[in-house]
Length: 253
Image 1 (spheres, rainbow, N blue to C red):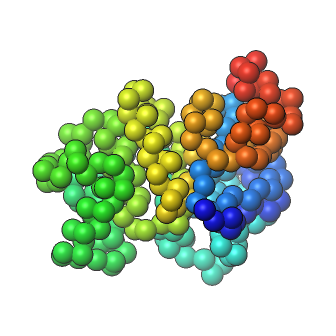
Image 2 (tube, helix red, strand yellow; image 1 turned 180 degrees about the horizontal axis):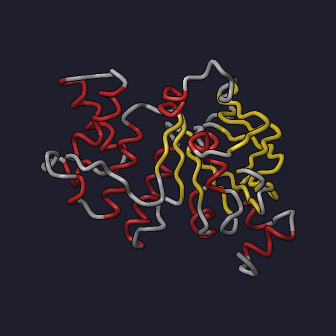
């Protein structure tokens, strides 16, 4: 396990027009751990992780102040290639969103786009990505079938495989289980724990039990402010903030 910082936010403020969504956020996310970001709806969780690969840039009226440092580099620096950044910091969304293509082509899409591989090498990347997403055994005999023929849980693991195929450093998961049944959720949760061996995993969840099960570090956001951040066990068993305790015990949220 590395103790190295992968992403650091420094005095991060974000607003959409006049609506302030993130307030003076300072946090340091370590490599090769699962960090969960929890909090009530509308507290800025998804906006925060969409800052890490600059997806908020796509929203007009978005104003950002402060810095997000990825491996020592401010991602808002003018020299940063946003396409390359999104390759390094991959994202899996709330609802599975496979392309209307074959299972194989979904995973091969990124490496082809980035000119990383073709032919046999591409086959190898597709197989490895599907194995790393714990999906290979279920789809290896039907790679040419449409991705849309898969179940919801399989589609979500396919989206994870698609993210892994371009060899990112960080994987962002935005409530990846909210559209899934308990069995599919359990598979994604065990996958997150596996993935941290090779990646830095950041998951947004409104499900505290899930955060407690999968995360090594947990952040609690409330109205755009970071109320608590630390090792998961300490945050859940002995939170230092009354609001965190109220959220964990179900008094609000």
